[in-house]
Image 1 (cartoon, rainbow, N blue to C red):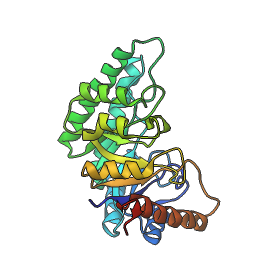
Image 2 (spheres, rainbow, N blue to C red; image 1 turned 30 degrees about the vertical axis):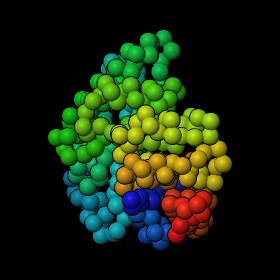
Image 3 (cartoon, helix red, strand yellow; image 1 turned 180 degrees about the vertical axis):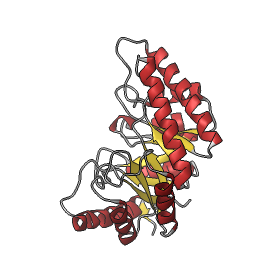
Image 4 (cartoon, one colour; image 1 turned 60 degrees about the vertical axis):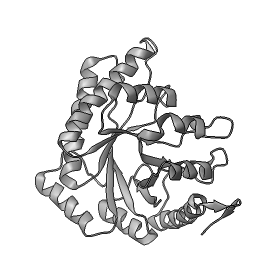
Amino acid sequence: MEVKLGLVTYNLARDWDLETLIRVCETVGLDGVELRTTHKHGVEPTLSPQEREQVRKRFEQTKVKLVGLGTVCEFHSPDPNEVKRNIEEAKRFIVLAKDIGAIGVKVRPNDLPPNVPKEKTIRQIGESLREVGEFAQENGVEVWLEVHGRGTSNLEVIKAIMEVANHPQVWVCWNSNREDVVDGSVKPTFSLVRNWVRHVHITDLWRDDYPWRELFALLREANYERFTMIELPYSMSTVDDAIKLLRYYRALWRELSSPSVDGRSQR
């Protein structure tokens, strides 16, 4: 298994333009990026055809892969007009991803509205995902459902949503949430969505309340050969400080993700 390390621009790189972002990734040795919407790099559906071509060409000039686009499109609202707006926005990001060469588009659930039956919201999210997935399939782009939100970060709920969506272009983005951990292990929750995981966010690897070695072992067992994307909730005062942090992060990632023999790291 060859897992690669990438960077989500939320939140560490939110204030970097595209050139700075690529330069940092090249300097640190990161393999890819996921561009979060609203950040300074400005890769948004509002880009003109010429600007989209410039973004595509810039990534063709570097070994840093444009992995995906991180949207905040969500489909849980009781307001059908709001759901429709989010579906259409997701479709615009899918077209953008196609134009600039990204593999996929991340969407998310964000809530189980308290005055709506849970089963109704799950079905609504799943059916919305299916519609988005059909559009994504036409454009050769994947859709990744992030494990996210109040109530919706429960892996049982994510499993139920995915069963409703039931579309070959719709997958799960594992988000490394504390809620994943059951009695010190993520195996029970990971097993619920194992066959759908096609994108992975990882957070503070120095956290001692998350079993990182076990997660990487589970990914190996699942023959996961894609990206684990660094998603840190804070920013650094300077780009140089960020580079130092990312170099440390990469070294720690290599240690934790390496297969072990008799409990010892195999390098």
